Length: 62
Image (cartoon, rainbow, N blue to C red; front, top):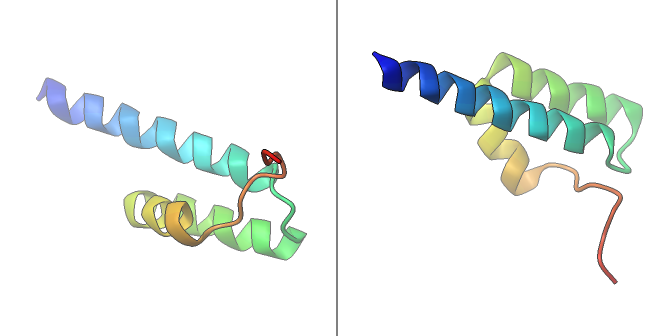
């Protein structure tokens, strides 16, 4: 049962990271809201979709 708790904490940490990255991206406000709702409503699937297709943060290396 301890592993289920660790998995939940890992999903929570990844979702928090995704939401912070979404809000620091250059996307429009509407897109930020939609991506945030996707990550919150579908925690694991939403994170995976965001990771591959979501808006990137404004900080880029040149």
